[in-house]
Amino acid sequence: QVQLVEPGGGSVQTGGSLTLSCTASAVPYKNGWMAWFRQPIGKEREGVAAIYFRSGISYYADSVKGRFSVSGDNAKNTLHLQLNNLKPEDTAMYYCATRPPASSGRWDEESTYRSWGQGTRVTVSS
Image (cartoon, rainbow, N blue to C red; front, side, top):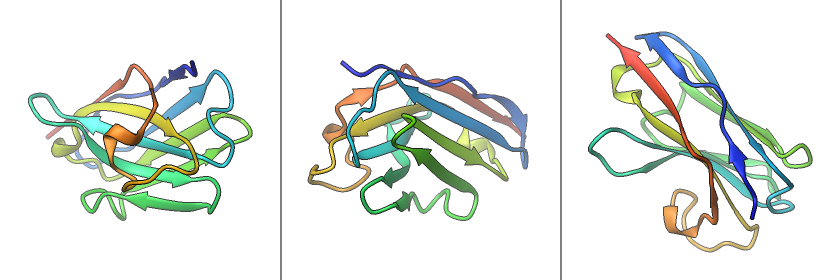
């Protein structure tokens, strides 16, 4: 079972920036997917961004396009999320997740991801 650890997170004011990182205990899936999801209190978990290492293509939720940037290194088992121009509505628990390269379904389809981190909290105050 691959373990994912997400240090980082924290509290910032509106307009601030944070960097989230995720490290896997082993290469989750060669040329697979790694993604960030988030769950605000009282709401459902939603996809934020993902990277498909086989193609190198990144995917973003409309709500974060232009503000967040995802990057990673499949060989080093790492995934990062740069959060810029943060807004109060970005406040949530952020989770890292992985799935195999041949996975079907949208990049933000939660049920297709096999391994999850414990989550790290991001709080944005106005």
